Image (tube, rainbow, N blue to C red; front, side, top):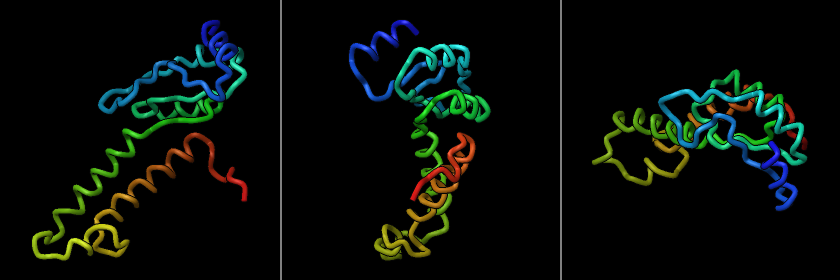
Length: 140
């Protein structure tokens, strides 16, 4: 925590990404967060803290980390996987050889496979918003 506090002091960063057991791009394993270290960092660091590598973190640990001061969580890997899985599921149901590609990509209509991906991402993001305690906090 001393090194992190010194870094923030010397660099004047607006936010600090911390390594507390999280692992970038983790998919098939679980990362165990060091919440004691997070507590020490939170007391010493005067700027918001970010968690890069939120994929693979247990949802209860993620919830606790956000309650303890994590302000930003990166979960790109899990969102990309959700999107790809939704596309994979949608594609076998289509006759891609004989259909207009414009109907299948980018129209936002029923046959648009990208809509399946978008819907899957939306549902996953809603779960993360609820888990980290951000639901209903947006201001108009």
